[in-house]
Amino acid sequence: MSNSASLAILDVGHGNANVIRENGVTVVIDTGLKGRLREFLMRKGIDEIECVILSHSDADHISGLAGLLAGDTKVKTVILNADADKQTEAWRDLIFALDEAHDNGEIDFRVGLTDGPLEIPGFTSTTLEVAAPTRLLAAYGVGSKNLDDKTITSNSLSAVVRVLYDKAPVALLTGDMDDVTLDEIGRKGTDIRARFLVFPHHGGLPGTSNPQVFARTLMNAVVPETVLFSLGRDKHSNPNEIIVREVISAVPGIHIGCTQLSKLCAKTIPVVLRTFSADLFSAGEKENLCCAGTMEIPLQQAEISDPTRSGYREFVLQHIPEALCRRRDRPVT
Image (cartoon, rainbow, N blue to C red; front, top):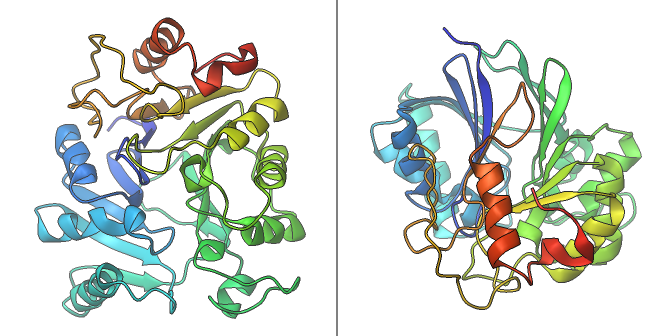
């Protein structure tokens, strides 16, 4: 069996879904909106998932799992954290279905995702490290106060996962981490450096915290070469311009990639014929909403694979003169 390993950051519109593969073994971190992850897996010919990790309980991170459970995809393990504050029907229905599947011997359903390594059967060179939440934050729980008397929210307990290959850090997947999460990572001295950073909140404002301070602190901790935003063109006008400016100023020569074309970069969609890899489903492809679309990173090379990388650069440089990532003459991915 090939030892090839990859990380795909999926274009699911507004939401997050990431697929990590090695030796034919698949791990999914967040499942995006309904049906979109399933379409990606079908195109890839993936019908078995070793482990699904849900960073937190927001619908745009969990909705795709219900479709997998109801379909032909075999899911072996699901890991998540409890959230007593989340009262949505989608969340309650999902955890009820997972509990029932566990009792029937169909799924290993685990509640409790805190800092430390994750053992993934079949992964030999790829390592997953949970950087947050810490056991302390998870034990306090949603609605409590941390050591600085800040309120712990669902986002404070959002799982932050670092992907390494041959012990070299490749990517940091941040879910919707907030300043409480970031403060706790700093307090413990956890290493979260990585070449790729999937920015939290889809590039939107980080709750009530100062966006400039949050972005600068995160960038200084990760020191990425590339920042990726998983966003939907039709929701929330992400990435926020304050965030992008701070990202650009924090790391000289930073590269930026967005799954879909933000309205802040182009009010209208350029009329241009674009082609995408047939096996990399992008939710925005059909309506021409993509900027980079789904991005795949071969972990051994640790760079976005062509033709996505070159095609995306050409599209932005030729057709998106007001792109946020082009301001101050910074390069694009």
